[in-house]
Length: 237
Image 1 (cartoon, rainbow, N blue to C red):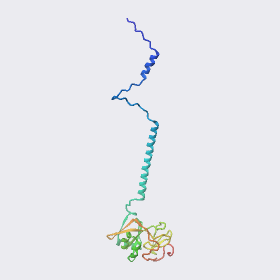
Image 2 (tube, rainbow, N blue to C red):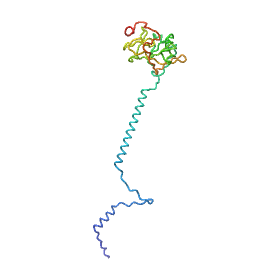
Image 3 (cartoon, one colour):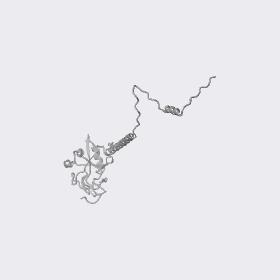
Image 4 (tube, rainbow, N blue to C red):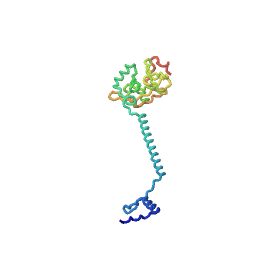
């Protein structure tokens, strides 16, 4: 029987050298004749700047979208698209029918849909009217009617008619207007505001989206005086 080969003693230095070799990373293999680029860790400060820029821009974008939406909502609120009723053109009806309704209502026809009063306008006053009222009202005046906004130009109270005086008389502060809305007394700065009117084929259409500022103090195209006792206050001044 052969003797067992004698074990070759291994020094501590050899063991450490072998362990060091095993811990070394594998060598990079050349690809296409060039070495791979050496890995460079990202700059933490640069990453921070990039992140801040991203968040800042995101915040600005969100704020911009919010402001745009808010602005659109405000515009829609301030300039709504009329779909009938006050603020739109209202087809009142045939002038002959409107006149009959005015007479049946003791001289004053109120239409809540348009927040307006409609009364008769005398043909004898047309020449004076042309010097005071704009062309947008003349078609209605020539047809014998006039449309007025219900609000008092003083502080905005709704002005009712007075059956006895045949005037409009405001119960809030006593302003008085003749049957066509021209100021006769009280603190109002002018006559009642009017609406533009159109007449086509004998049909009256009132544009409540076009309010015409009332005539100045002293305007009296019809010459109408109070026809009976006042509903508000005493005599006019």
